[in-house]
Image 1 (tube, rainbow, N blue to C red):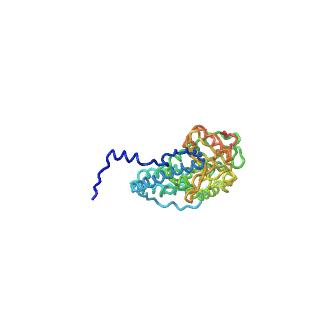
Image 2: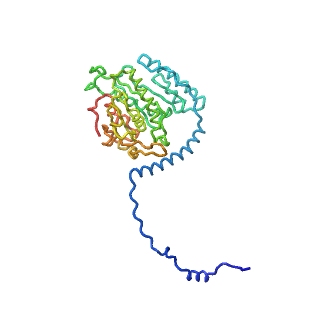
Image 3: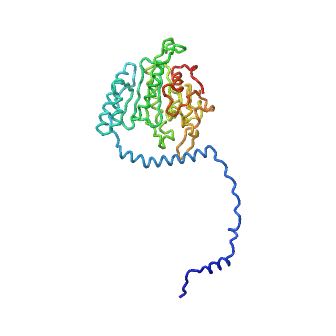
Length: 372
């Protein structure tokens, strides 16, 4: 039997002297050519991949925990109502207030005080809902002003994370717009629906008529929720015309992901103006691609983080991600108006430049709108 021990230091040195050098190791490594800069599309896809990964991790971890902590809230089915008319508005308002009150009682019995409080606030005698559905995230379409006699109507479409729990901040913007419309002196150049020079009658509709995506979710990166929302928005505008008539001036004011909804619904929509504020894109590359006769307006506040969203779209795993052209870019072709220094949530802020311009659009005073 041959016994072998560990090699000594002298043996290792001798082996090193007798082993010839490897030419491959001695050969100098040639310098690598610099990598070409990433194209905007490639940069978008890289950033998108990271965003999707973060969103998927959040969905995998946060959503199950939230669902476990908060079971589905019970609520009654919506009130069964025919499309509204001027004669049936009060009936609709009464029925939806009663439904909201019942939803509040059911949420309270279930132990959800936040939803119970939100529903209870909507059941107040001063609230006027054309639609209320307390199930799931919840749906609500509220009227501010006298819709039965209105000849200037604004319909607000919200963006992500708007639910019954967060509805108050959405309504605050609608209320600020209605207050500003009431405060303006409309006698210069504004006309009523029948050609008179009397002060116009205005109404604002807060349309939470779709299930909005979460800001931290994969759905906020695609047009899926917008495609689901477009048919009910189209249907609502038709029903609205049945109340206010064909001569009324109707404006659609769309914020953030709501602009994607409006882009999907725009084709053939019976409105006079569509305003896109804080938009990540509409899914269309130009005004003409929206295929609407409405005037298209767009604005972005100087401090709006939405400016950092890449305005491209790409197909990933069979799904179109991203929303295309920037609505405030010259190539898109919208009428770009000033929005001041506000951030993403400031377009309907009282006293803001953007709120004043939106009110001018609603009134049809297009010559009074300040351009960017």
